[in-house]
Length: 237
Image (cartoon, rainbow, N blue to C red):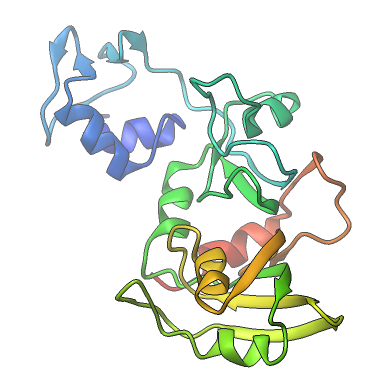
């Protein structure tokens, strides 16, 4: 049965439907040797669909997993600088999975990875509004730090939704905070801390929506449960 190419690429775990549109526009997708255009349809059982010259793989089992990303790993599948990637840590899952969102090189903790393009697109959609909680170790003027962070409503002129901030531990010149945000702007928590005169020494994501990092060791991963996947799929968009 013929289906839109975006759906075929997503079902094969190649990319999300939105990314598939970009692939098609860039001329990376062909059907029976002819470059595809937006709106093209194909029957995977009859037509030769290729991405970058590689035949579209048959649909593989959907995999969703949680990785405890250590510091020093980049959130990509490959790196031109030769740095260690999160893909190196999840090879044993047996299929190619993609990071959902990002954690920068010096950040650690919960990172979702999947080959379900539609789920990945859903989780990263601005309308999904998944809460994310980070534990943040800071130094500097820690007196009233939680209250100051909770009052940050813009970063470099860009409005943001206020975070929920809880003080977990306090020392004379250091503190550990739990910061919960609804958005995923680039390096948002670090930029919020900088705006409040705080230096981040460590940042670890411990929760996304209803999925918690728990006691999973750094560098290890586990499959999400059916209940966790269902909960992720039920979020707003």
